[in-house]
Amino acid sequence: MERTFLMVKPDGVQRNLIGEVVSRFERKGFTLVGSKMLAVSKGLAETHYGEHKEKPFFGELVSFITSGPVFAMVWEGENVIAEARKMMGKTNPQEAAPGTIRGDFGVQMSMNVIHGSDSPDSAKREIELFFNESELVSYEKTISTWV
Ligand code: DGI
Image (cartoon, rainbow, N blue to C red; front, side, top):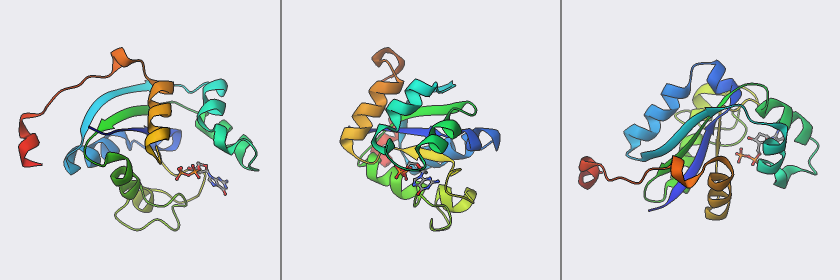
């Protein structure tokens, strides 16, 4: 079953949106297989956002993601990587549709509440970056035949 890495960013944690975010993915029918609060170090932030190293907003991105605790998660489900991206909405909250997490809760580009892997390769990389295998559980919900 496909897995993705999602993270409530420091703005989402400060705004008490962890429960809201978790609830949306639970209600959708996805399965939470790991989660933790953590303070992202500068090194972890730079590795995680490595693809943006040359961008003008890289410094701002790293300082934002290290500015407060985040809530990191691994979710499992059919096509969960693409579905989670749809539920998050466009990167810029001002372009994100109402009904999406960023459309409903975000106001500006840098504080867009949630991160989610954008491909199977990045999901694998990000899950391994943030979690040990022992922190993830594989299980079947009895309700799964109804989802
Ligand atoms: O995968 P996403 O988070 O939707 O988007 P991304 O991987 O292209 O960019 C990572 C984060 O970097 C994004 O959530 C917000 C920030 N970002 C992206 N493009 C810009 C930006 N921040 C600023 N200030 N300006 C940008 O053009």
